[in-house]
Picture 1 (cartoon, rainbow, N blue to C red):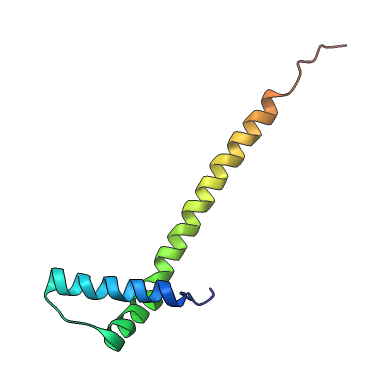
Picture 2: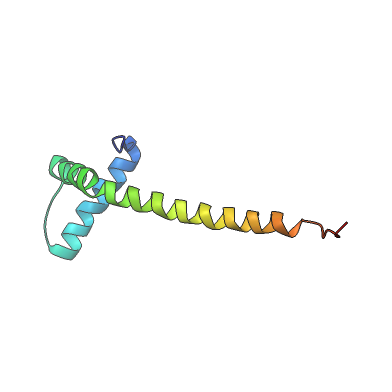
Length: 83
């Protein structure tokens, strides 16, 4: 699996959100590099689980859509008469 890369703005928003969550919910002050390192850890360790779940969800959606298309094709069949 390729490394999960986040652009600078997304990384900043996630780091800020993580810092606020830790402060508001757990009364922990984690800022700056510490928050970035924590985000890196979460991304590296938990990210693949979310990524894989997203792939499984997409695969299930595609399978459902393919089944729908297959059914629609069968509905186009014309009745035949024996010779």
